[in-house]
Length: 306
Image 1 (cartoon, rainbow, N blue to C red):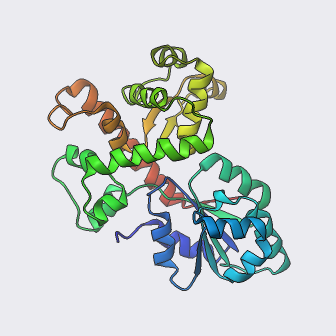
Image 2 (image 1 turned 90 degrees about the vertical axis):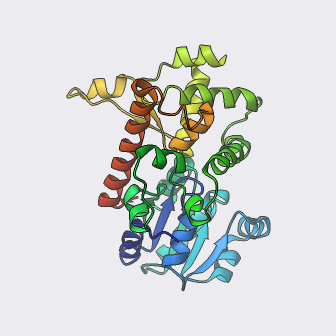
């Protein structure tokens, strides 16, 4: 596997907190990271139906059977477990007892803030950085090769074809995560929304214009953008003004966390990707640059405590 820079911070936080929460996009390498760094921890995957049913029906018995220390993967599948974790760490103080992971940013943060305030640190694991790829001996001479190969760990660890890998990622994301977060009646309409949004990477978001092009109202546009942000598909870059009121009121720019997803959505051919230097190359570079800055900034800060 490719070594992740966040691993050192994970080890440090386990020496300071009873619980460490690792969040991030699907397939970013959360499970691989924690299992690799913590081989002596027990492991429970709450995506497994029988494990999830046991945890939901009898949380105390489930935690007793897991033992400590333990990794609880995809904790958002059984959020009620967080209250029982709070109960255990309050009853028996100690550090480095639980590592929990999750993929839904907003709902997981809300649940953690409610149940584990002051008891956990939060780490956000993004896809691979250019530095992490370089450390693993994976470098390309041209910028477009980074865009086309992308930064999902599995693509590089298993030598997958990037185009197929990201197409499958998008398909499973729409079919699974979106349906969990919103009542999506028309998948084709949401896919159209993704495609049009990909064409607006690096631009100010105009909710009315985007909604008119898709065929939905601006309220739905805002809701769907929140869903994409909650599941780590996009991030919104807020404008900077000395006036704090303007920062809150002015429109943000939208960037895809996975640049390959925006390329895949637009179905841009390799030969056409950089043919228009005034649009695609500039926006793609901006997206990659911001992503790298975000990862580096979060790695340097390391964490946030709840």
